[in-house]
Length: 221
Image (cartoon, rainbow, N blue to C red; front, side):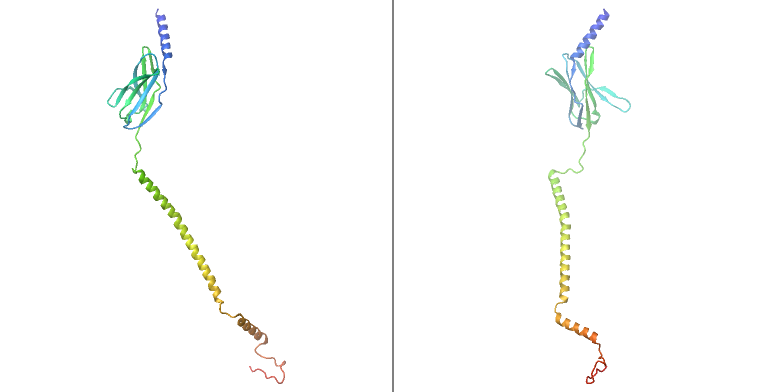
């Protein structure tokens, strides 16, 4: 008789477990500190099990698991059932850093006890802005940066153009001065003077006595 009873309970537990189907939970939920947060666990089951929320914290030494109790900050929302899916909700009015952990529902009915997949709640501190600037101020800063960048490009380029123009003017002025040196010179006078110098170099300052006649008066030294 006892053996048959054990078989009956095992068969009933297996049938009940087959009827239970856990729905997918949200694996991770990140919320900033002091914000609201809602965690849900859903399942399909004809039975109405008792539900306990558990919080699992992975400490350095050993994991810590404890039952979540109702407080002013933590509340249990009423469960709802839609299309055969029953959901239970754990609501945080204002999250704190120590609320970080893995939250699971423990479903208990008769001899069947099981945990849902669970949701890891991560509470973080948002980064604070060093300078709290409005959008209009940001746009003004970007515009000023653009103007400064344009000036940094235009001013050196303008200076280089002015410098090259000045050098070109100096080179042209130098060329005109060199041309003006030879202005006013008569080429015919230069040629006659040149030929006289050449002739004097060829004849010499003295006349040859042998080549002169008797009637020619010699040049005195």
